[in-house]
Length: 192
Image: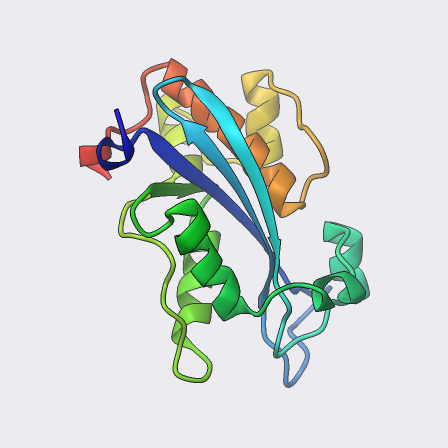
């Protein structure tokens, strides 16, 4: 099984600017961290873990956002522009050719929104093959959809690292993906 047959899966989790209440005037939700875990579906293991900090252009990191994610404005100021982050995903993580998964559809929709807006738009870094791991996990267990932390508890898996850290959440979601793979419930590449 190689890249063309879907051996590797990119599990993505992002963090975005957020507030305790409505979005302040003149600001917008923007991606500030992209966590990525590469899963080898053949070997059934997590093989790489990455973190990309993204410098917001139309928003600031609120105190609420820092409390939730641990990310500060100073930290994300050292990140790369969103356009560069998307190019890096394609260049270094083959995001345009690999199937990718996220917990729910928020991450996919946020990438679509952010790529479509702004000055001239940004090339969407992913291919068409996206798996909503939250939906697959719930369906495979006959459960209602639940958050990642709840699913980890349900599966008897530990929450590793900090919840609401993109890199740590991608790592944990990958553990849930592998649990689903081991039970034979993960969709085949031709099904996504």
